[in-house]
Length: 117
Image (cartoon, rainbow, N blue to C red; front, top):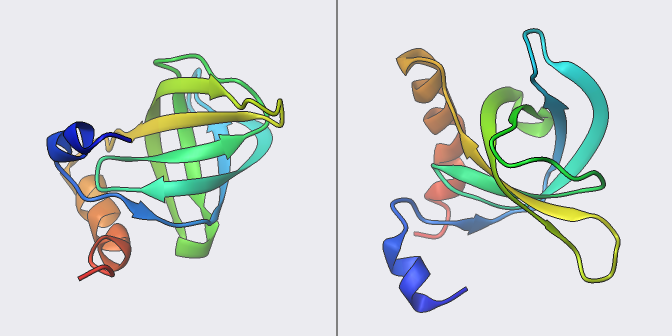
């Protein structure tokens, strides 16, 4: 990633590898896909995940961050096939539905976002 892109970021990005259950949300409750992805990094705005299935941009997803005991809603920003054909990287922007969800999300992420300091 270029220095220019890093300078445009609102939130710091922290490299972290945790298991994340990803479910499509065409409606509520979310459609269980059984997809278990692995995060590559996370920030206050979203996360990058390695998954086995492609996801369309603008798709809504539920992200169950089991180790953090938290589920977040998100929107797929991009999807890129990995060069070795082992899956896909997806960028997901968090989409809290209200202030309470946003507050809980940032509280959960606080430990990771401040761990570099």
